[in-house]
Length: 220
Length: 156
Image (cartoon, chains in turn yellow, orange):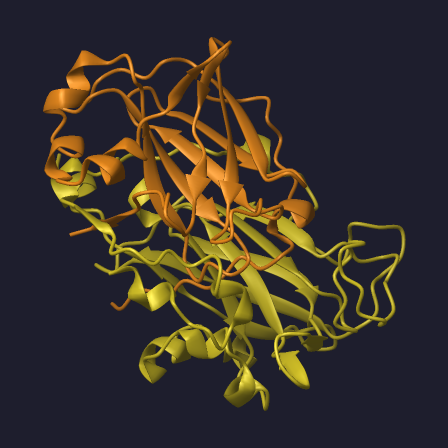
């Protein structure tokens, strides 16, 4: 049903969420396969958002890593992942963002990379800041990194947001809470990963992205 | 394993990750259209992705301030019993997940027997999936809501 898109607490849904029931598309008729978006889409510094300018960005340097899998637990190798985020002060590097927090000339906040043969990925960035938005009185987004993942098939395409553990803003954020099931919400929160930190250099977080399985693709 | 939930792309997807459009769906024709909200206002911060499963062509395009998008494409082929069509994902601020629709072509005799189109009983709903002919291709407007709301699919 289209009903799950209806979530007036997030005001932008009101005129944009479809109202009619979705048309059922049997899986056997779905458009499968997906674009091969390989190395040509990824630049050498696209997986290190702290090295895209002459100087280093301000903020807390972090490593984010994990795997892209399907619900069958199978890794999804060589798939394109795109990330974008605000800077440490909670400001996106774009004129559309009017939040009066400082821009960082050394931080663009966008990255791209491919998963490896085991579906694993790793990138380096700055921990994004929380920021206010005008959705409701005193509304603030919890710190998050946007993830866009292609997977193997059109049916697997996913765009989501990765959050940080223990964020005090979760309770009042209608976007985070648009996922009604608390267990599902928890799957959007990265785990602090002491093992993967780099001493004297950066803290680490682990975030696995699980895409819907594509039964067709399993056929030989 | 349980799937990671979807979240809205928010307002910055298109502007933060500009898409190199050198590889597209072809060069033969244009597919153009406008993305509208429930008040028939253009959606200026939308992103469309088009997938041609018959050829493996893929394109991404952001909407303009007037809500317009445009793709170059080659005419898709049939897929089994399905008439030629393009699969379209729409992403935008205010959409908690992408919505998925299809573009069919008005001059395709195969439309009448297409298993997806012919399973939609309401003619007006079915017609929202069929593009209109235009000078150099086709026009396919997308209405997220309202009396002309486009048919969107869910996999079952």
